[in-house]
Image (cartoon, rainbow, N blue to C red; front, top):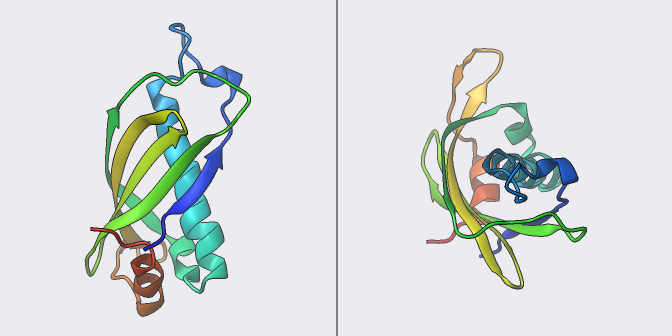
Length: 135
């Protein structure tokens, strides 16, 4: 199956006093990639309701090596590792041709903003997510 690929631009302000990208920024990069995958591409591919409400239930990140500012973007590959009735799990790698900077995962829950409660995935959402499913 396919992985979603997003090129994240590093900002000078992303660095901390130790002259490497601060760990909080990694979550922002993952968010940018996730928004591109689910809201931008998902809308074009028929999973429009993903943009109407998805909340994060869990994040985990394993930092592999420091990332320092540079003008070239860093690549974020995102894929789906699990799909359930009312949640799914994304995996990520932040990397470039020299190696992996971080591996991460998120559990996401479809959410009804009107009802203010979790909801089940619909058939279009499930079909879209299955296109990125890897074991």
